[in-house]
Amino acid sequence: MKKVQIETIIKQFINAANEFDIDALLTLFAKDAVIKDVSVGETFRNTTGVRRYLERFFIDYHTQTRAESFKIDTPQHAIALVDFTGDFGHETGGLEFNVNNDGLIKTIEAYLD
Image (cartoon, rainbow, N blue to C red; front, top):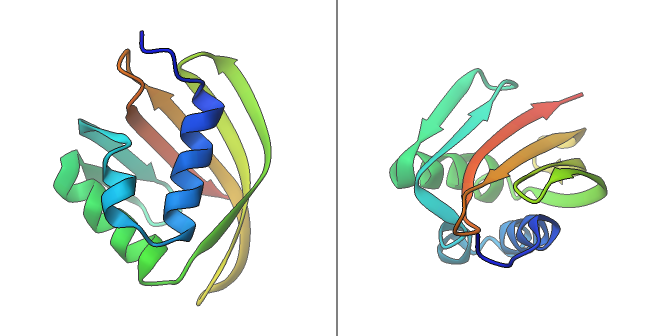
């Protein structure tokens, strides 16, 4: 496995999302990545779906994400409890990350409290 801490990957994701840098965000994902967001009832697959999700829910809503805490279960799995603000108002929730052996995001499960 590539020597990258999962907390570092999550922080890179949050920083790139807060800067609305879609290209930097996409470099963090495996090509076959999946984002499942129960709050919108949809699953987004592969690079095209991941891009659509990030553009729609992070960039279009001007979402700013702040990590409140991390629960790191394994080097490849962690949950970030987060605070979201944007054009939609304010929400709290979580982002559950799984990374592959190359240190790329394989899945994110997103939810709101």
